[in-house]
Length: 390
Ligand SMILES: Cc1ncc(COP(=O)(O)O)c(C=O)c1O
Image (cartoon, rainbow, N blue to C red; front, side, top):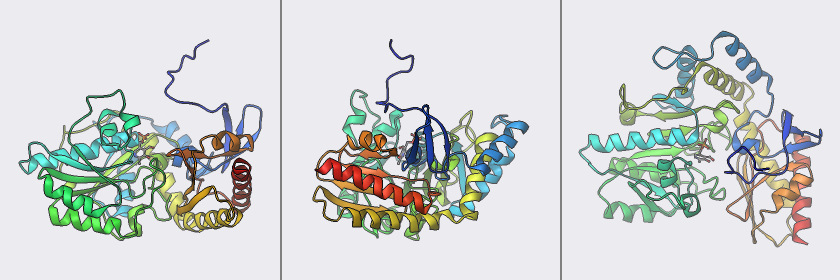
């Protein structure tokens, strides 16, 4: 029988019924260690009591009114986000792609405000910004774009982590108004740029009056060892997009803006029915309070280091490995050969991992993973990789 669900995903043969922290259980009550967090979503793990409490309380009070009216939890969440990020204001939506749509619209309005009738946004090769038509046009992956032409115009592409390429492109294109970039490319293979990359982008944007727009949908909310990845560089962007871990599983996206980017939207220029509703905002408030209270970004730094060095030691003689790298709890084991079959092998061993860019094992464990679970993760993954390399 064909499935009543459209076949947009190549699903693994497992269905989870409950979770606790970094553990998940399937329909047969088999236990799995989650080293992926729903692809960087459940940073606080599964069934976190603070999130459960916030959602239950809010759902008993008020689920939805509309952005036609004031929303208390949205006000509070915006205040907390602005304080944590050094940005000025926030637009709330429901996903990462939507947050990037808002950023793209801000960049276009910014350009038009400067009498630029065809504003262009500089984007990167191997980037990922979402699956809506605008965000897949911005994405640097031909496979994701295939079949969806005509793509949205208005994007100029350069290689990631390559400042000279940006400088020469800016000389050739007068219409560029913004740079949209992930601080670390997630889907592209956990590509960590040289340490000063964001500082140099900040300077280029200042010198050329461009908006620096950071897609922190995957890197944000404590994942890399700071609340936001740009805080490793002591810069502040003009626009920053968030989603994924902001609601720990409750859908919410956010587009933060600062300075000249903060006054661009006016009533009527953008909107969302569900964006910033009381339920999602209450969940996100509880996420931010817990992250801060439990100092989870600092834990991400320390635990990511422990996983990286543990795997490095266990796999030091394995010649199939090209590189093991990480920024906080965003980790990659790059292999010589394509290795997508490792996902299924790890699953058999009770471990959830992901392979991206065909040859890179990606780990995004919940930040609440404990040290015993870290040891189990290292041991299980090393075994899976060794068996595969034999
Ligand atoms: C960097 C980045 N931007 C945007 C998105 C799209 O987010 P969503 O799937 O919530 O639309 C993703 C999702 O993986 C992402 O990693």
